[in-house]
Image 1 (spheres, rainbow, N blue to C red):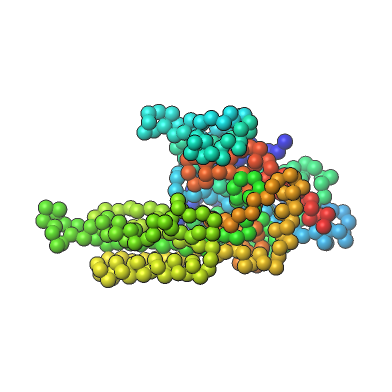
Image 2: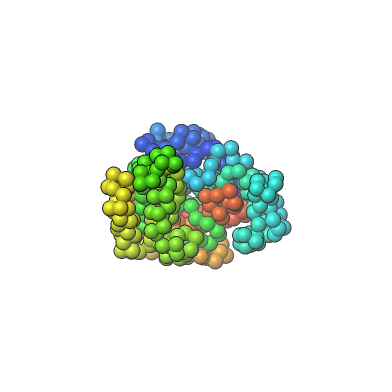
Length: 416
């Protein structure tokens, strides 16, 4: 029915993996390549005000087709946002997606080989796979992530817009489209000119399974710890060597093992060591810090600083250096007073027969930062699972449900 799948299969083949703490935006050239492709597609659909910036932002307008001027003035301009970059944890280069049609509920072998190489997507590990029996599932080849986060959102937004253009009998207000770079590394749509873009409010399509809707998210910070060791021949190193690897292990052990992503859920915050790289001479540890509660979030940051200070006191202030930066904040405070925007999405779900799954987002979206800048932007589902890894998958039917959702929101906005 929609062009969602074909678009998605095309977009994921572009390598748009972002890089943390780059000096430029976009952080990787592949993002600009895809941005230019998307800009041309939007122009070919006949959209207005199509712009692709040198920073890989893509914006466009599908103008209102409401003939009654009185009615037209009352219908809000609604924005839909998705990011074009993919996560840093697993490579997004040479993505080779495949579609498992009419999934039977069994194991899906993504990559064959001996025990050390074989990669299997199994309901034993991911029980919710069984919810997709009889549906068509897009998976990876076991070597890369898939990129449904967030190219599914990109495909859904363009497919929905294409459907509107092909069906002019569907009345709608101005539809504002924005695709953004470097969301995964905390850029947070900083260069999106909200006033120029012109949306009254917006939704990010950047969520999980069908029905998911979020207007709460983590407060977030990142921390990079550089440890300076001292290498000495191990045979003559007593009292001389400072092993940065051992020092890094000691530092990481200061954090509660019960406060990691793998041991928390719901509103529980965490510390997460993303990477640990180096040798005796020097090590770099990268962390993210998360909590929904603002006070607890600030306490977590203070604990990180205290842990560094403790190690500095033990080994010397020049041996441990921290670079900690805030990334985004909980949008909940900014959504308060604008509940009608959330209710519009919930009403769309109910009319489509979708059971809303209201969850506190254990992550963040561009919508969090946009909400803090004055453009209230809750987050709704795209249909994907297992983001940021080789076991990422998405149902074709779920992607089309996200398109249904977009169209229903626009329809209800006209009827209000």
